[in-house]
Length: 249
View (cartoon, rainbow, N blue to C red):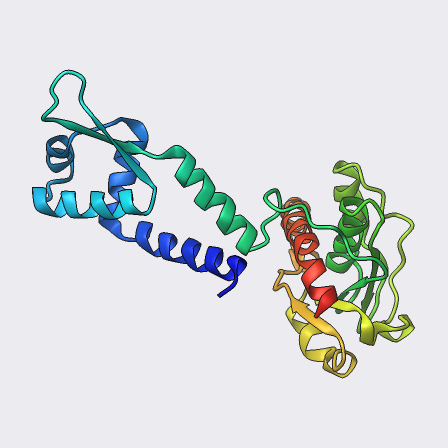
């Protein structure tokens, strides 16, 4: 196994380790204060041999450290190894390509197409976010299977975030060239079913996002648009960290 694979396996094993309820509880306690075994026994209600067993496993994984007491050499204090926990957090972020953890080099000459039914809200917002978050280094497009017109609330909520999408126009998926070589993201469940004919040769992702347009109450509809805007920002930021591997596949 190469070094990258070994690091991934190590991160997975440590994640499994801390997923245990008892070890997670011990880490939570030790994150707040160093403790002796007896204190952990008292706080958890577990047997001493069980607490010692789990502490040993956490120490071996580099997530807990031990320090012999300066006041009584017979006593040992245990504490959370913050550097070890931070390293695990970083490694998981790298393995899952989480935004804010990895800074990938964006691929050149890649097009991302966002598809929904009407191309009036969700796909338009996603297009705007990708163009903004990538610094226009990624070619962002959007289209619909039954295009309508750009919804004014989509323009409004993106303007609240400092992004102008008012110039974008709704278009039919047939109007897009070279879609077969693009990374295609369907942002509504209906479009995913309807777009199968266009997606045979594309790298396809799907984001199941509720349609804010259909919310009946005006105030609730505006809030729905804002929620979709914020959801899509997170998803697009995550997509940027995945694009290098998607473009290479």
